[in-house]
Amino acid sequence: MNFKEWLMHFRNVDRPIGDLAKDVENDKCFPDTNDEDEIREHLESHNAMDAALDTFEYVYSFYKEDTKP
Image 1 (cartoon, helix red, strand yellow):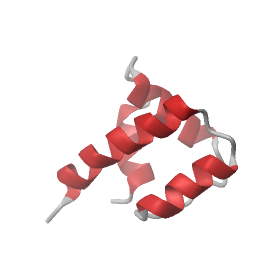
Image 2 (tube, one colour; image 1 turned 90 degrees about the horizontal axis):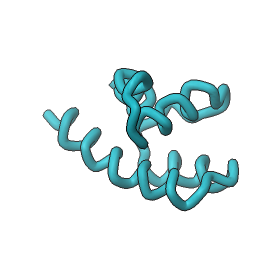
Image 3 (cartoon, one colour; image 1 turned 30 degrees about the horizontal axis):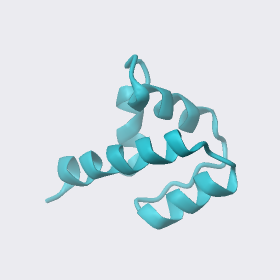
Protein backbone atom coordinates (compact mmCIF):
# COMPACT_ATOMS: atom_id res chain seq x y z
CA MET A 1 0.00 0.00 0.00
CA ASN A 2 1.50 3.31 -1.01
CA PHE A 3 1.34 6.48 1.06
CA LYS A 4 -1.58 7.96 -0.86
CA GLU A 5 -3.68 4.79 -0.51
CA TRP A 6 -2.90 4.61 3.20
CA LEU A 7 -3.67 8.28 3.74
CA MET A 8 -7.11 7.99 2.11
CA HIS A 9 -8.28 6.01 5.16
CA PHE A 10 -8.14 9.32 7.07
CA ARG A 11 -9.93 11.66 4.65
CA ASN A 12 -13.01 11.94 6.90
CA VAL A 13 -11.04 12.62 10.08
CA ASP A 14 -11.55 16.14 11.44
CA ARG A 15 -7.87 16.69 12.19
CA PRO A 16 -4.81 17.84 10.21
CA ILE A 17 -4.34 14.30 8.87
CA GLY A 18 -7.81 14.49 7.37
CA ASP A 19 -7.07 17.88 5.83
CA LEU A 20 -3.91 16.48 4.26
CA ALA A 21 -5.80 13.45 2.98
CA LYS A 22 -8.42 15.66 1.32
CA ASP A 23 -5.74 17.85 -0.24
CA VAL A 24 -3.95 14.79 -1.61
CA GLU A 25 -7.21 13.30 -2.88
CA ASN A 26 -7.92 16.51 -4.82
CA ASP A 27 -4.36 16.72 -6.20
CA LYS A 28 -4.64 14.81 -9.49
CA CYS A 29 -0.87 14.78 -10.00
CA PHE A 30 0.10 13.61 -6.49
CA PRO A 31 2.81 10.98 -6.97
CA ASP A 32 1.97 7.31 -6.42
CA THR A 33 5.13 6.63 -4.49
CA ASN A 34 6.36 5.82 -1.02
CA ASP A 35 9.45 8.00 -1.41
CA GLU A 36 9.33 10.62 1.34
CA ASP A 37 11.63 13.04 -0.46
CA GLU A 38 9.69 12.81 -3.72
CA ILE A 39 6.41 13.50 -1.92
CA ARG A 40 7.91 16.42 0.00
CA GLU A 41 9.32 17.89 -3.22
CA HIS A 42 5.90 17.58 -4.83
CA LEU A 43 4.24 19.37 -1.92
CA GLU A 44 6.85 22.11 -1.93
CA SER A 45 6.60 22.58 -5.71
CA HIS A 46 2.84 23.05 -5.30
CA ASN A 47 3.38 25.74 -2.65
CA ALA A 48 2.17 23.74 0.33
CA MET A 49 2.01 25.80 3.50
CA ASP A 50 4.51 25.11 6.28
CA ALA A 51 1.74 23.60 8.41
CA ALA A 52 0.92 21.12 5.64
CA LEU A 53 4.58 20.16 5.30
CA ASP A 54 4.85 19.68 9.07
CA THR A 55 1.71 17.55 9.03
CA PHE A 56 3.12 15.47 6.18
CA GLU A 57 6.36 14.79 8.09
CA TYR A 58 4.44 13.80 11.22
CA VAL A 59 1.93 11.63 9.34
CA TYR A 60 4.60 10.00 7.21
CA SER A 61 6.34 8.74 10.35
CA PHE A 62 3.10 6.93 11.30
CA TYR A 63 2.81 5.55 7.77
CA LYS A 64 6.31 4.07 7.99
CA GLU A 65 5.53 2.44 11.33
CA ASP A 66 2.13 1.18 10.20
CA THR A 67 3.41 -0.40 7.00
CA LYS A 68 6.79 -1.80 7.96
CA PRO A 69 7.16 -5.56 7.45
